[in-house]
Image (cartoon, rainbow, N blue to C red; front, side, top):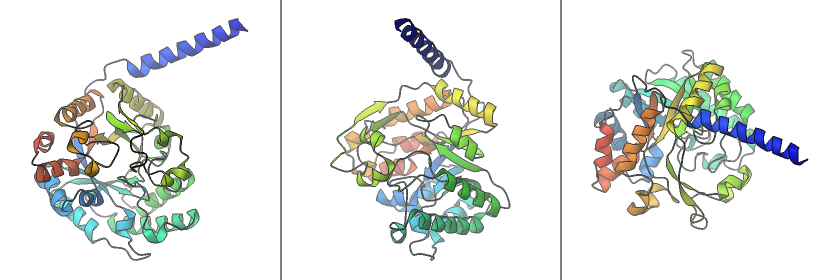
Length: 352
């Protein structure tokens, strides 16, 4: 029995060392040309106390970005059942078109920024099947409206749909397939569909099976709340990530993952699925025990400051990937306009 245990342990150890050697060792080749973009959420800009139009315009004109990932939050688009309000999103696309900028349009129930799933109040108490019916109707309205608009280069259907993060009522892979099929059926220009997944907690196989392009996150220094890793998804709404009651039950973590970790995974996706991997969320703002606008400046700087910003950009360049959308443009503008700290904004301008 002892010999069997020793043999099994030896096999496990050898497998582990091979895994570590493959994914953690090596120097990826530098991409010859890198595309830089910025994420934008109208709702988050408002939550930061900013004029969202002014912020969006600054990203296009002052920062000079030619690539934006725009979140189309359901509760802003359909504040009343069956009554759609597209004026704000129309404006964002029109401004991007003026600057010849390209847009990833994030659509669905889960579109990023807390609470992640932006369900209108009128639909929150619907049963799962009823919510899904309303989501498909909403997607149809969006795609039919924007399928011929030049700024929209990609659809991103849902945000990290396999990752149970946020105040979301359910995860349903079969429904995700229905969403993707609907978007592809309605879009006569057949724009690629991006499906995103965690960069640190996934090997992206599910995202590659569902999407035309794999979108990944890339975070380096975050606040980790262990309770979120043990809570079942149906209980997440009872345990808000940033609640005062639980916010102290965590710790700051610097992910020890090297650039090769992302590069090797991207190579696997390319070889097995023949699909591109792009970073749709590169950390460029704080991630603390509360939302950024509820953190003190000292607490914000524990996970993001000018030095960390430069480090994250340099790290991204070393992964061998060639497309990065930075997560935090609203926060940079808030620092510049509300805190008289333009350093990160000015540093970001060098990328564009």
